[in-house]
Length: 189
Image 1: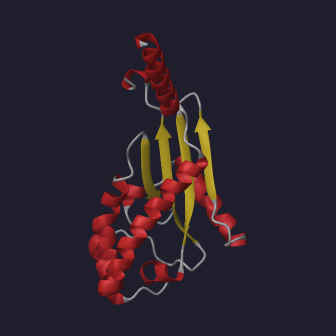
Image 2: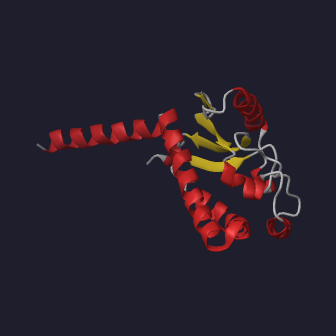
């Protein structure tokens, strides 16, 4: 009986260990991006309801990074990036910049389908995923061509080198960017 139980436990452990090294699916990444987007959107909507767009900018400044950090676990690194940055900490790397440029082109010809991209490098054990953030009408209150002076003052306070205005509804605002790395064998046990 002990031998059978040991075999079952070892079999389960081996299955768990193998599963932890397998790359996530695009569906996994898409779900994480949606969860992050929903969490940020909820915070932003509440702030705007309480104090208008200036409060939304302040909330974004205070909450975006901590909310994003909550999703950085189990091999995942989650964030946001853009071609026109508000926060320089979100500067895209080479792959992200290529995808952002491609997303912008795709949205110009088809604003109904949200662009996404992914790849898996089996040698490195690295999976990457990006999903476009499309500018919605409400977004133009802080990111549009005609941002109010009260909003601009708050943006200038928190983001003195802001580039993230001038967007029209349906255009690319940025993207959720996710990467996952396999846990090295030495860290599995």
